[in-house]
Length: 89
Image (cartoon, rainbow, N blue to C red):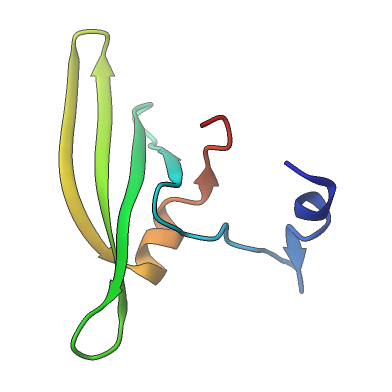
């Protein structure tokens, strides 16, 4: 994380959401211990102009079991659920 990113994480008492762009990878730690990883495939508006994120979701259950699927959420819901940007990739 750059210094600029560090300084800009707080805005008016709330965290800024990471920018959602094609190719970026986000994570969500579930309460049951599983980690959901989402790779953004595309962002496009629907017929009402509401932005939607299409993404590939990977949920790893164990070393030998995982679930991969393609999903779509509106941008606000995606950002609320996937708050952690994976900057290692």
